[in-house]
Length: 181
Length: 181
Image (tube, rainbow over all chains, first blue to last red):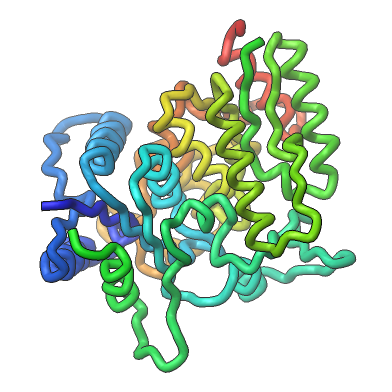
């Protein structure tokens, strides 16, 4: 059976296990095996924190390496951009030639999502954040390095969609893009 | 001459060209060729925004592929975490087996930097952000996927350092870690 790695900040959610299970069930319906980071059964008892981190890192990397594709939850995380751990995994998977599909529960472009959180100023045709940093404006849903790495445009909520704060509907649409295993 | 890719949010700074030049000069002093994304001479006149984004993406990816190593500015960017474009490049370079060194102009752990920006609540031994997401606490300077990918611990300001808001002193310390080309 072909396998898809489930990248996203869900590992930090209070009900991480349940959401991982829900995603794996949706994968199974679509004929795929979903690989969720918390499914790694790590023997970390008694290890120092940094050794635990290294064990999680090694296990996640190995999981991505044996996956045939990745679906990444790229919803805003503590700011306008996606969870950095997830973004790292998108870059890692892309370098290995794995197709990566992404979704965000918040629609619009990166510029829209940045403007919703930070006061921006316009200088000529450019928008800048409070630190003076340019907010790129290519009409893409994320930083261009992420948006251009995706195998299809990022999946975003559409007008008329039911509320989908946890993104399972968007995740299903990514599974459909992934196609038959 | 061996080459080091200069990843970071400097491409968004108002004086991006000057900071790129300063970093390349420091690389040359250390015997390395610094590859700065904006040095790619792209023919994008008249292209649609998304085609421009794709051209930048392709050029950056090619630059990383021909680099022998990466130094990444992982300072907080519009929130507690590093610039997502830079994080993507760290993941991409790590998958290609390139040694990646990183620095941040703000010291402390990821937990410290998150606590400085967001009201956190403690539930048992765990810290959670206003969305209920766990703030990982491995004593690392970034999300573990980034921290564990680095070839050396992230370079951070030390007590007694002169102010280094643009991080060039930290960048030099990364060059020293990189060693002789």
